[in-house]
Every structure is written in C-alpha cells, then in structure tokens.
Length: 411
Image (tube, rainbow, N blue to C red; front, side, top):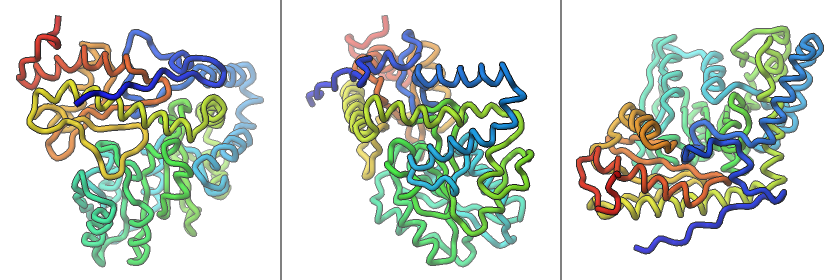
C-alpha cells in the first residue's frame, strides 16, 4: 500500500517554523505530546516573567493571587464552552476527580460504573471512594471497535437500581477514541444516576469540550493539547450541590463559595493557571484552533500510515487500527504479538526505547494487545515518524522475536 505524502512542515503566522516555536530538545524525537504536553517558548517566557515577579515582591504577589487566578479563569473557561462561575482551576485531571470523589456520599449497597478503557488513576480514585463506604465498583467492558450506539447500549445493560455514579472518558487514554458521553449522561440521568466525565484529553481537541460533554461534572487538562504549563486543568460543574466541592488545600478563601474558594491555595505556584490563557491565545493567534485540529489530524493519519507500512510485512493483521470515533491528534498502531500485553509492559517498553533510541513514545495496552499510541501537534514533522521507523521498529521486531528485513537491521 503506497504511503501518502506527509504534510509539509507548518509555518506559524509570525513566520516561525512551528518546530522552532517549542523549546524541545532537538536531540530527542517527540512523538508523545499526549502524555505530558509541550509548552511553547512564548508561554515559557511569560511564566518565567510571572515567577520572577512573585520572587521580587512576594508580599505584593500572594495576597492578590486570588484576583489574578479569577481573571485567568474568566479568560480560560470560554475555551471549553463553560462559564467562569462554573469553573475552577485544579492541578490536573486526577486532582479534579479527587475533588469530586471527596464530596460524594455513598451507601454500602451502592455501586460505581467505570469502563475498561478508563484512565487507571481515575479508576483507582473511584475504588477508594467505594471502599470508604463499603460500596462497589463494576467495570463496563467496551469493545475497542464498538460504535457509539453499542457503547450506549453497554451502559444501558450495565445500569442497576444500585448504580449511583458513572465515570466515563470523553477521550479514552489507552485507546484514543471519543465516547458519546452526553448520551451516556442523559441515559444515566433518566435512571437517577450521576455522571463524572473525564475530559483529560478533550480541551483543544474538541471545540467547547465541557459544553458538549454532558454529565454532572467535567474536567480536562490544559497542559496537554492547549500547551499550558504542566499543572493546569479545569473542573466544570453547575450541579446544585457544587458547594460541597472543596480544593485539596484549605486556605484563606475556604469560607467562599465554589469556585472562588479554589482561587487561593496558599503559596502554590499559580503561574501555571495564569499562563494558561496565554497558551490558548498563542495557538489561536499563530494558527487558529480549528486549523490546528485539522493539521494535527492530517499529521496523525500520515504518521500512523508510515509506521503501519513498516510493520505490515511482519504480521498477518494490519497494524493500523481505525477507530469508530477517532480524535484529531492520536492514532493506534498495533504492536507485534506479545509486546505491551499489559500496562506495565507497555510503560517499560516506552522507557526502554527512549533510553536506547532517543524517541519519546507512548505504548498502551488493551485486553492483552499492545499498541503504539502516537501523538501529533503542530510541531510534528515527517522526520519524526521516519526516525521512529529507523530507530524503534527494528528494536520492536527484535523484542518480538522477528527478524527485521535488511533495510531495518540495527547497525
């Protein structure tokens, strides 16, 4: 199968090549934006200036930090289709889930529904919540290629009179697909069940991500695709009981209502929050968010095909894994049988290849099958995927006990 030409390197509106707008190590190949994001140089510079300001005059800085965070919240919330008064900054998606879990009360016979495509840390939090009250957690198994209708039906079949909470991903982390969370939340509400939507990957990849998600609570990371500094996420809810939500740190705003009580939390480094609207505006002004989603999708599609083409001669099944509801920036490529069969094995493979080849990757596992979950952003270029083929594919084949073709032999 011929490989389509890879899109040309992007030039930003300022005339800068997109790759040069991020301070990434040129000695490393970056194909895993989805895990921890990457911050543009302009945003790093802005955050550094804020930190310098705080260090120069801490007594001026910290008493006014709540006002500054509120202003950043007002600028950031519309990006996900939310109102500022419904939105609170939190350090990351897991922190948002913890805030919600801490506010909930369950009875001993109650149950929480999660999925087998959910993010492990969020599921662990649900399990801890259940243990506090002697409740239970039950997993809804979703086939990788299930259609949206089938996904909703799986939840309909799983609901029981004991179900009190559904925890479901808007974009799944291990499998990189969209789930119909609004339909699931509507189904849940009809049965008196509440829904927590994990939108960790959604901001930037889905326009108005919080508004379209549905559910009682939604959260999303801003340090992934929007390229804010690490440690910035948003929790959004207009639930009637939202005043039961408390930040992880009690501070001098503790007597305020939600979300104001989240704006001041002692001496945390709030420059991550203050820099978030700058990051969002940077992508908008330099390329436009709608254009960025299209560009990321084109790069992800072309990159997945490059890698799949390199692996096709070595397996009976096509390694390219087209999903019913793909997202703009991530794709799955199946690994040879036996590699990445568990999350632990997939994580170990990621770090081994980084150390041995200088390529940052993400490997995931679903139902005993390992995948390469590639990520593409504006700075991603053809040479990144070509480097993966040259450096990583031979290592992958050797680990799978497959003899590479002469053109792929490791020097």
